[in-house]
Length: 338
Image (cartoon, rainbow, N blue to C red; front, top):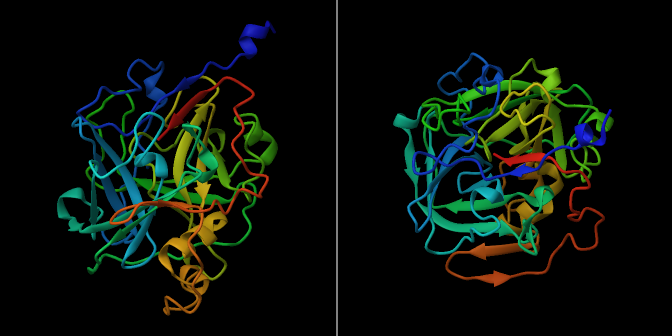
């Protein structure tokens, strides 16, 4: 095969823009392969009470939609790139809105934002670092009949393990107005480490900082623009649903996203960031794992975090001694933050 056929073309862009921006996937070939996130089903009322809608408005008027995952009545986690990226810094001029307590956008309550904490490793030398694409949002309080926290899954991830991904993102990648009015869900499956490594030279294992699912295992179903940050969850051995990942990026070998025939979805592996979450929130490990309702039996120190709120500071990087650091992709690829 000629070398150029092995070349995977880079096409990196920020997804999530609403009507204020042009659809980034317009013109992608074979849009018939692009199906809505659920591939046919809408989440029932009260089925995903730990999902929240995140809307980010920048000073230039551009709007980004993401999701967020409720981990306590006061804290949510989301994908950091929803808040900042190369050339799009997050500061006090950026407006953040959280909608919760309903799978339908129209029925949501709005939470009062107190602080936003962005992992200090999300951007390294102004380059996105997918392994640390996580942020914490603190709100005044969230309560409602359809609002619950989801515990964090800390067990092993195995090949072909089913994962339920959720989001209010686009149902048609070629249409910037196709954002779902109601929360969608899709069953995806974890790929083998060897197959997932074909998509990213920085991916090691789904038991590391990223969890990888493959479109070849889910019959064209996939997440799309606007789905980042919403919970992806698994069912543990006792039948409890637990958060395993935050939708972060799609990497395609053929340029077809959102359920394309040859793509991988990378989720931030939440359990790998427990120390970071504990340090920011003061929530105990037992609480975050769902073992207790006592929130503060163990308090970790804040590290590896940059807080944007009443106080701004840069803290020590807790991950600096680990082997998981950002390395530029060896191969040129289509890479799409959600």
